[in-house]
Image (cartoon, rainbow, N blue to C red; front, side):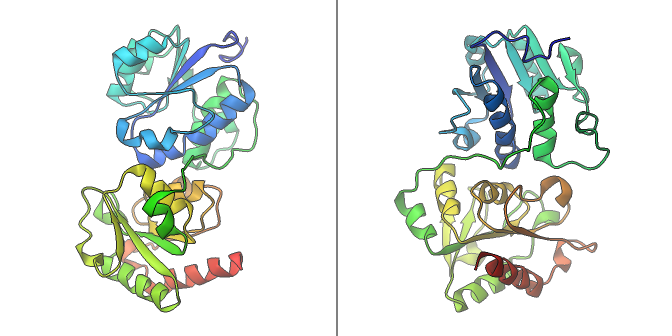
Length: 307
């Protein structure tokens, strides 16, 4: 039986839904690259929340970026809608898209709405092991008909201009925030690392989102509540990235920036920086048990690799 992609006429429109989070959005781009390499004739629209729109802007594998609006999605007139999210809102969008073919992972709640249920990544890849998120998403493309291939690095576009780009030229970026306490390394240890960098002639620059309290880091440069495009520009030109397991770490990996990733509650097999030089630090006792000296040793190790 022909695959889903083989059944699509030349020039068909596809809608790919990926709501939340920043890291998931970044790690969707390798799958889009595989899709477009195999079927460059297809017109691909990315359905994403406005706050993550900058992840996909300028990406040559994407023909349109749609807000998660039923009206906007219906106007796209997709022949195939692929739901990579699986939440209630994405299911409503999938059902309302008007696409004759609707695909998503079979484990999604309300998967009865799909005309094609994608199996587990392990089944598609033929390997019963924990898979990275980039592999999980790319496996959907393989199942739909893209020939098996090496999954590339995430692909982001950036305009290297403005203050963020100027700052990044000699900076190491630190991101001391995360979505939950169990994923957040103590602020005082980030400060110790920043002082170490400063003493060794490297400018530390902290990044903080709109809801983050950056008071503890006010003696250093801090990029506060900046547009995502500026965050990308800063990270893209940085010497190194040091931070908790969070979306900015995946942005760094997408630009090939060396990453020191400090992990707590999440699984590094699933969420480690994808296809960049990286040192991933964990502890069975939790993130608070990771010492400053371990992070500094990881920094020095990456410096030697780059030398």
